[in-house]
Image (cartoon, rainbow, N blue to C red):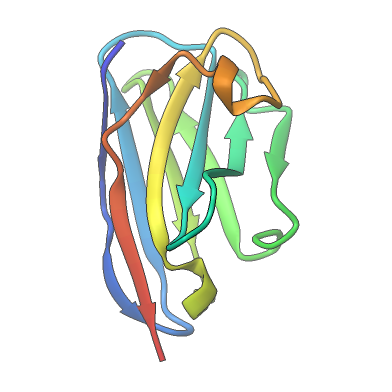
Amino acid sequence: VQLVESGGGLVQAGGSLRLSCAASGRTYAMGWFRQGPGKERDVVATISWSGVPQYYADSVKGRFTISRDNAKNTVYLQMDSLKPEDTAVYYCAASEALYGDLDRWSFWGQGTQVTVSW
């Protein structure tokens, strides 16, 4: 499965961005992860095939929303009320299950840069 992200860019604090990730085939679990400057890659949000359950990192709860369109094999991340600390490379990933361990996610996109300025 190949994953292609889009939608990153530069936005001011308080603004919004919507990331998209198109998969070349059907996937069960999909998720968004991010790696900020000097930080390890960490989970942002994950979603199962049916749409539930969903998981959100505490730092994005109430601001980010993950969703998917199975007919298009696409997962989205709506990011609202963005903060400078959200600045990172955002990666889409897919796997056969909702793993807590990043190393068990099978497929990864190339990443898209999100930069939030004051």
